Image 1 (cartoon, rainbow, N blue to C red):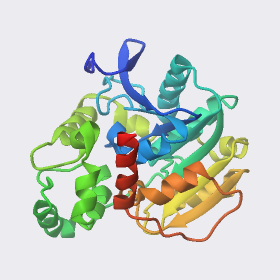
Image 2 (image 1 turned 180 degrees about the vertical axis):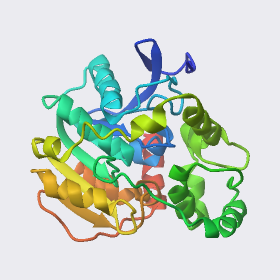
Image 3 (image 1 turned 90 degrees about the horizontal axis):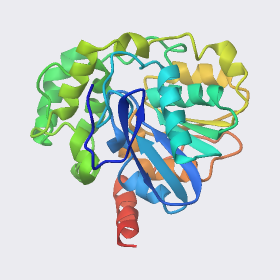
Image 4 (image 1 turned 90 degrees about the vertical axis):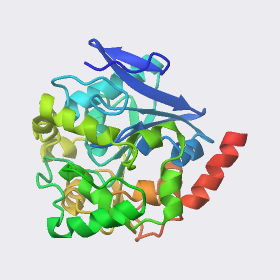
Length: 312
């Protein structure tokens, strides 16, 4: 079991320490990252912008970032228990949960477990295994060319990258240099971005896959069934990238969730990182009805706003 740095805020659940951060004041937002990720996915310009009007809480899921690694406890249902334990620890009520990728499945599972605590969910390109067991499959014939693009941007493209990270690598390989620089701002961004000087995220993921039951549990399909989703009355706003590989999940969610709205945005699975301005707008002002495809603003605009927050 890993133990995070004692200087970091954390909660202990059954002997496992989970790292979290909190900033701002106002209504409660709880941000949940996906696989092969960490709190660094959110904790930068996006979180700082949201913190102007909300109390923003985010955590490293178990086995990720600075949180402890256990043999079991990685199904959406188990990880939902972790985030609800954190909410209880911090006294959070009337929570708006935002989940990216597998974090979206965790958000839905949490709402099914604690309907009195979670008042709204935003799903950013969510992946729900029970609705789409086949995950993204990269074109391995393009891997050599992709590695060269990454190398030119100062990113690490060597070794046997986990399949779950391939969509991310393809998207950041096409991102502007200033966008990539901004993604690495701050302690947590540096910790999980795959620079040529830092492969912590890769090593962490390989260890998780090699020494735990995580991969099998990620695919557990007994919780978020279509029957369970049909009973979830919590408002859910569903946002997917036009180039996402998870439209099958989106279509099933729209079919089964009784209180869902939908947006399609430009970009792919990692649009919250590469084009976060529009996401912050949708989180702060969730629409009451479905809207057409929207074009998000650049990350640079959001970074400028977050710097104003830092100065204030």
